[in-house]
Length: 116
Image (cartoon, rainbow, N blue to C red; front, side, top):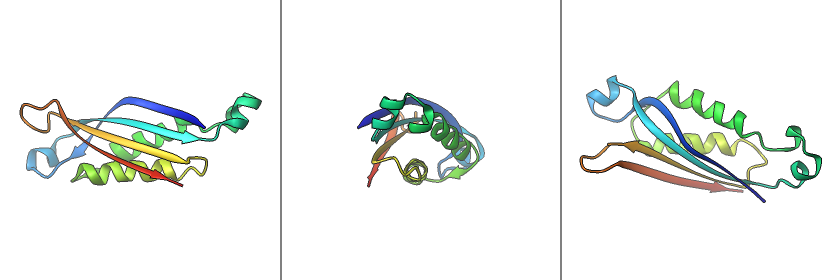
């Protein structure tokens, strides 16, 4: 089983319930962990036999930057759903951080996971 980790993918989106959050894009930090069977990728050494993390990341960027979200929970679930559409994925964990969401805190984050 291979473990792909995407660390600190920084995107801007509309996230929140207060008026200023609804009207202004904010940073979010996304961390992904994806497990998939990589036996063929290891043996053949060809992208056609691997889970293409670039394709997954590009889909996440388009989705996050192109939509609005009231809750971190919803944003995190939608990212997890995007990752899980790839049949090779056996397990995925998505963490979304909202920097400076609380006074005196570096960030607030939600983590969700899925498996098949």
